[in-house]
Structure formats: structure tokens, C-alpha cells
Length: 363
Image 1 (cartoon, one colour):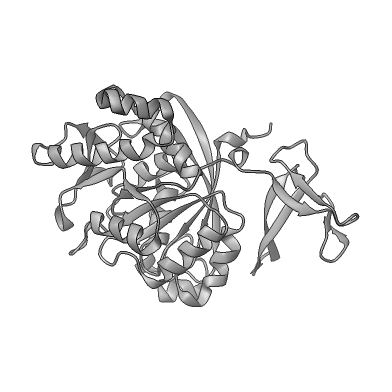
Image 2: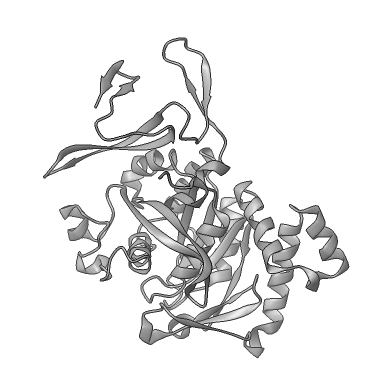
């Protein structure tokens, strides 16, 4: 049976080198049940760094693809009774300037992007390069400020840098609880509650509690700013905001924020520490909530190889097959592999497809 595409997310993870992309992806694989042991980059054991050179150097050289499933919505870290399995196709991209071409190829086929920043270093040179590439391909994105447990970390500083240096409307949807080594949770500004992670469960369980007294004033300020920003994309919400801000529901904020993200008008900013297993589940929920599915995207435009005319392909299994090969890799066991993004139709094992560059059919 064909998978419902509205529960599919084709996403990438991009950043400057050493912001924690691969570590974040390893946590995603762990929390979604794909791996039962967390591979660490510094040990050379990361699942996504499969090349020997990557394991030796502790950096990503080529884009690596993986798939996983996340049950959403969740409540207190557990799937609710009406949760659906969201299928993620994830590309972990390199952050080094020498491998920018790998990022460029990947962004062309993505529907959404998780953009990582170091909470200490903020926006760095390759952050700017990759951000511009994402702008070129009109890829909606979420910002994840990683390494909140490090000395000198500053979430709001990074949010301001994204605004000023990248020219994007970065809007915090959380506030950190605790600083540096004492970072232990976040204030969820949409839910207006605090999330405190449990150290002993590797962050897989947490408590949802009242906002700490010392953060209530700041949380109220940033929640009002968030609602004011998203209200401009929903007239009914704007009226409610003007009349009675407290009458706005959590679902209304999520819906308006999703619309703004898909319009690339707002970048929701989240914070956490992937290495310390804090914030990754919240990020996964954010991917489901805010980033587009294939059916949310416009039809892909191409050229009919026979007539030279422009044609459109919708993301529908009943449409003729159309795909774009974006990466070629050599595997020591199976030989040459081609990675491609399917835009319409379906492909079965043993099928023959037309390579319109060579004009030949290939199996």
C-alpha cells in the first residue's frame, strides 16, 4: 500500500563545520529506533560517517542519506493515541567549505531543512554560504541552536545573528532553562510550559512543569512577540491578538506558524544539546509540525524531451514517473549507486526508466 505523502518529510541537516550535524542525526536515529546504540563522531563510530576518511577526521565529507519514522503527535515524550508514523528521509550534509557542492546538490531535492548553529560560535562563514543556497532553492527551514551546554553559549545572541547577518526573520519558540553546564530544559513558548529533561534516561523522558518564576516575565515577553509575528499570517488570529491575547489556542499558533514557515516568512528557533541528548525530540516534533510534506510543495517543472515543451509533475503516484538523480556513490559491495528524488509516479524493482540526458533507458 502506498504511503500517505502528507506524513512524509524530505529534509536535510546543514551547518558550518563542527556545529553538530552528524551528532544530531545520530540522536535522531536513536530516538526513532533505527539504531539502539548512539554512535559518536569523536569515536569514529557515527552511522552517518561511513567513509574511512570521515571516521579518521571526525567530519562529514559526502552527503549521507538515511530514513526513519517518528510517531507524532507526542505527549510527555510518548506518542498519543492518535499519533501517526511520520516517515523522514534525511540527508546529512557536509559543513566544510571544500564540499559545498555536496550541499548544493542535496538542497535541490529537499522539501525542508534543519539548520544548525553552534550556541557558542553562532553564524559562521559556511552558515552564510549554505543559507544562501537554501534561499536559492526556496527551502523552508527550522533553526536549531546546538551545544547549549558549552561555556559561552547564548541562544538569543544566535537568534539575533540569524536576523542581522542572514537577513531572516528568526523567531524563538523556546527559551533555555539554565546556562552552559546547568542547561536542563526549555520553556515552550507555544504551550507556555517548561520542559525539563531527565539526565538518567539520556533525555528520552522529561517532565512538563510550570515555568520557573525567574523566567515568567521573559517568557511572557517572547511569547507575545511570537504570537504577534505569526498573527500577521492569519487575520482571525490577528483579531484575537488585538482583542484578547490569552484566548489564542496552542493549535492556532501552530497552524499559523506552519503557514509562515512554508512561506519562508519565519524561521522558528529551537535550542538544545544533541551531545547531551536534550532537545532532539522537540526538534522532531517541530519537523512534523512546521516543515512541508511533498504534497505541500508546488508541482515540479521540467521539459518534455520529445517536444521541448514545459510540463509540470504533481507529487501523485498516478502521474508519469519523474525523478532527479542528485548523487552517485560507489559501494565496495554492490558497486555504483545512484540516489534520486522521485517527484511523481512510482518505480518498481526491475523497471526501466528513460535517462533524458543520454536518451537511453536504464534499469
